[in-house]
Image (cartoon, rainbow, N blue to C red; front, top):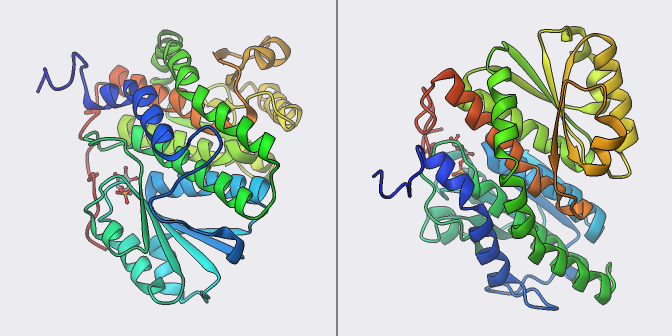
Amino acid sequence: TQLEKGGHRHWMSKEIAEQPGVLADAIAHYASEDAIKLPQDIDFSGIDRVVMIACGTAFYACQTAKYWFEKIARLPVEVDIASEFRYREPPIGPNTLAVFVSQSGETADTLAALRYCAGKARIASVVNVSESSIARESDIALPILAGTEIGVASTKAFTCQLTVLHLLALKAARDRGQIEPAIFGEMLRDLRALPGLINQALAVGPDIRETAFALSEAEDILFLGRGQMYPLALEGALKLKEISYIHAEGYASGELKHGPIALIDDSVPVIVMAPTDELFDKTVSNMQEVMARHGRIVLVTDADGAATAGNDTWRVLTMPTAPSQLAPILYAIPAQLLAYHTAIAKGTDVDQPRNLAKSVTVE
Ligand code: G6P
């Protein structure tokens, strides 16, 4: 297996490193110069509502996609955890598109939620395993083309899920006449440039590793993000607790003062996911509230963000500058690497964390 791991110490590190390649494959599979092609067409002009359902990391991919569908395609989206959705008997109509996101395609609660929707709504799934139950029972199955993922903590499947969901949001925007062809073409070009940016983010690895060694001493860590970076804060916290067993919470930056700020002192590192976008200044003021209480900030941002806000922070991790809508995919890399290197520093079992399963087929 050492050979299969391609020189990597863990599957997780191999799978993190594979992301530029698998993302490029997924993008090439679904997008040409000026169009998005799906295995079967979904015509979004007849759809007035999207519900997205998943568990774990896939749920955070859905939460991120909600920002894209609503902003780019002007289509209302509800996101739910499968184990909640399935017992709630939510009303679902024929103009609803129900999207199920699952790496394995076998998660019991997600499958049960899909079966609840069958016959009521159009059903699409975003899966890594094309022969899976969820794929088979969907009207349309969109493979994410990540290749086999072995590490229990999902990495490349997450960024591939995001990529396919981003493409789906662009398709919805186009079908609904919400985007000019020129802008659409530009966004496809941006997407094609993403694997290159991911490579650059991977190159920040040594800085991330150093920060992670310092983080490994902490007992609690907060992750903050605003807007489309909020679900990534949740995913960053999940990744960290899954493999390093450090207690971590993700919060929307604006919610900080409604509770978690009470936890802040100099022993609580706060990781802020904040590319320079239209919400950056708001997040910087949240950061200042933390620093005023001696919280230690790790600011994950781009060169502009580092120049404007990086001076008083404990550490800065500088990502390449990216088109705003793609930042959640790019910033998944530092989230994954922070968790990975923190776990290494703590000496935990990265690929087989205690109590967790790769695929949860019990309810
Ligand atoms: C388990 C895994 C997670 C995964 C979740 C959903 O909890 O440990 O990494 O995100 O199941 O799995 P799925 O296969 O449906 O994406």
